[in-house]
Image (cartoon, rainbow, N blue to C red; front, side):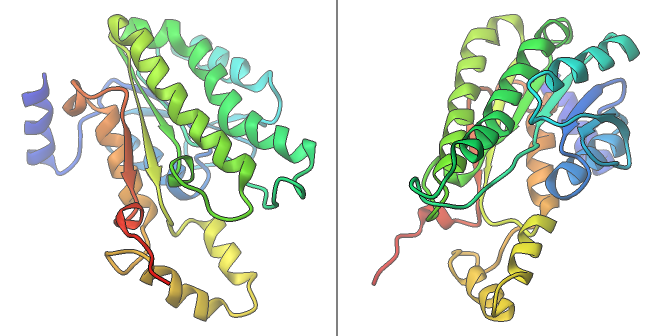
Length: 256
C-alpha cells in the first residue's frame, strides 16, 4: 500500500485521495483552505466546518459551541456514512499575560483549540475506525515553547500535542493513525492582518524572517503538503508524532 501511494505521488505530482471523505475544520482561509484544496485536487470529497463560507462542502458551525463537533460529524455521517480523514485546523488566539487573560478568553481558547478537536475525534471515531482513517491535528511550535503573552494559546496547543499521542496509542490497534503538525510563523491571513496592525509593519516583516535559519517565513501550502502526506497511505506507519514545520526556528538558540 505504501509503495503504491508513493508511485501515485511520483507519477501524478499529487497524492491520490480518490474515494476518500475528508473533514477539514477552519477551511475558509490559510492552512485549512490550502489543505482542503490539496485533498480535493487529489480526488477527496472535502467537507469544511467553520462559521464562514469556503470553496468546499460547508458545515456552518461555531466551535466555541460545545455542541458543534457532534453536529458536524452527524452531518457527514448522514451525508456519506464515511469519514477517512479528519484535519483539526480551526483555532483562535487571544493575547495577554496570565494576569491580563480573562477567564472567558481562557475558556474560549481551550474550547476551540483543544476541546473541540477532542470532541470531533470522539464523535468521528466510529467512522474513522471503519475506514482505518487518519487524523491530523494542527498544533503549533507554541505547544513546544512560548511567545510572550500567549498562556492560553500555548497551553491549548501543548494539550493538543498530548491528545495526539494519546489517540495514537489508544486507537492504533483499530487502524486509526493520529499525528500533529507544529507550524512556526506562517503567512496566513491572520498573521498578515496582525502585521498590518503594527506601527511599523515593514520593519516587523523584515525582522520576522531573520529569526529563522532559512531566513524566511512559511507559506500555508507548505504546511498543507505535510498535513496531506500525514493523512495519506504514504505515511501508513507514522502515528503519534508531532511534526515541527518552522524553518528551523525551534533549533536556533538566541544570543544577547
